[in-house]
Image (cartoon, rainbow, N blue to C red; front, side, top):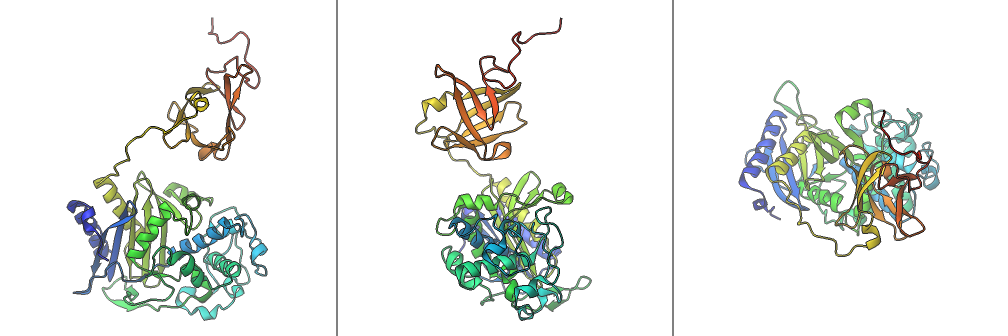
Length: 461
């Protein structure tokens, strides 16, 4: 299928090509391919290669390493949405007999279980999976290095356990479940556990000489759910669109938003760098832009899928070398180039088709103590409560159908908002998670905890 290159301006396409060309040269990558997605569609594909007459296209497979984890996480979230498990369940409840059964499913998804980063020697990425036929061989004698839930510690064995969980609850091999529940519905026909022609070969480039060495391509066996997959820029571009928009045949947009929400306590250095891990996805700060996605690497390959959700732009970058180009930086740059050169044009503003008069009564200015807030009813039917100063606690709320509203983000996420009316039916105040919001600062006619001084406001004389 030919990518519709005309969807971007010529100057934008040239800037994208220039960026990957510089990355291929400076990173000394045998080849590097990339794609850009906007509005849920692939709008650009580019490649650079060291082989004359060879131009990898969007159908050439590269190994994608830990981007595999995002696919595994989608399978686990499907199980949750079907009611077969809860993210707070200990693994032992559904997969008994492992030495890591005390870890919860959410902790495994977010790398907060305390499990070791790697399986016991020998180096699992360069040796056959047949050396680790059982989960015990993956976990080793000392699987836990940290207390559960206290810190983010990336764990490949953790995702092996999640793959085994999928197999146990579905009664079929991980890759078979993945193909039937994710790959086929999303038309990701060039994503597979083993390479399918045409595919790139993996190379190690000598750090001090312009020569190369072929890398082995091992079947990872039990470790497959952590990093086995091969894919293409074409397939990963479609997968990136799914991660934003959702597809009810696979996973809802609401569950994908949950996957994109930070779930792990970051290290101090990660806080400074603007990095956080979610549920099978990573978030990174790039300038003023927040990006979500995942990176991957295995001997001979580097991969990155990154999404600027607010910009509605995603990028995929694949290279066939063990080290070299900083693919996460390249991906962030591709998103930035498109977002800045051709900024997203918002949909036209449209008024609400209908509004409840009793809710419209709430619109306007409110005070929590002496802090001023504005309550707005937005075109999407939500309520937005925002500080007038621009700084402070803010949240949107959705209606519950019983007169209460639930906070969607920030300090008030999950908290209830309700209007409290006086005996004459007039709204006395808003109760937001027990906080009293009044029309005037410390309104004496409202039920303010602690009461209001009867002498009222005064100066110092």
